[in-house]
Image 1: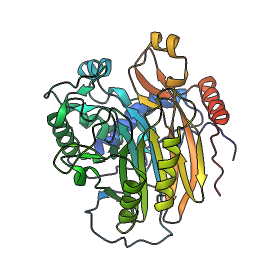
Image 2: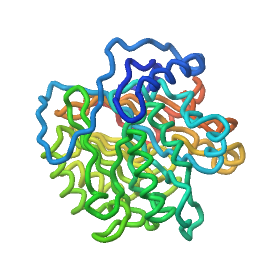
Image 3: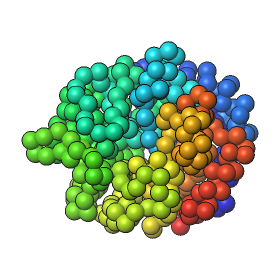
Length: 376
């Protein structure tokens, strides 16, 4: 199918019943819709209500059939520290998501990469960039419609094991599922399993960047991505879920092309039975492709990041250009993929639906990179 801007639709119904009352998710979407839809094209109300999402204990067997189909929205890096943390202090934890809340909420499950920590404790790692946000701001993700996050990246241990524990506690309190980091390697490799419309979806997350802190049998960290580890975990998750989604934090920052490591690990996940592979770390969009009925997005770029006019002048538009990738999933594989163009506003330090010119530039970039969207 041809690439085209996708109309933004409003949230169809509240989703997950969690520690955060998901009725607020709908309220936020409605409040933001007036602002968002004025910039978006052809908004319409969805006809089918969103399904309730529940977290499923591991070690249980799937009971669904291939006829169940759900919608999933996947977005890139959420970096909520630095200028973003200042803005949320002044404007509330939902500030980064107000313009895109209808997009995030208009899916059965929404997944993102958490690029940082929710903590006010711990010691900063000896590195150029360390990201932390007050734990209270984790509720902003839930209110915006985000259901599950990947924690397997090079910033999960920016403030050591203490910061990681605080982050996990903040996510748990907000009712947001997570995978890819934990007190040891067993916890880090454990999938988060969510259920919507009767379809069980397992989320696994891995990092393969040199500055990520790998978990060990007796040490906190992230799940380290190797062919053997990913293959073993995906096969095991397939015994507990109908669909397996793998997030991979790998590649080279600001590179247009996926690295050999990205391709190797993504294919290992698909070969082991993953239906969807979502890439992060390059901070720009990269190519997408089908592998049978599985779909690989090598990089979804940034989504919330404090990028300003100086960054635009220095880095160009690519780090500002992103998408919310809407995917229809069933136990048989990926049924449909639609990119919703999103642009990070350098004046407001937050994402918004792209205007027509920005949307066309984003879709043109996807075409040039090789954004394969034709369902087999």
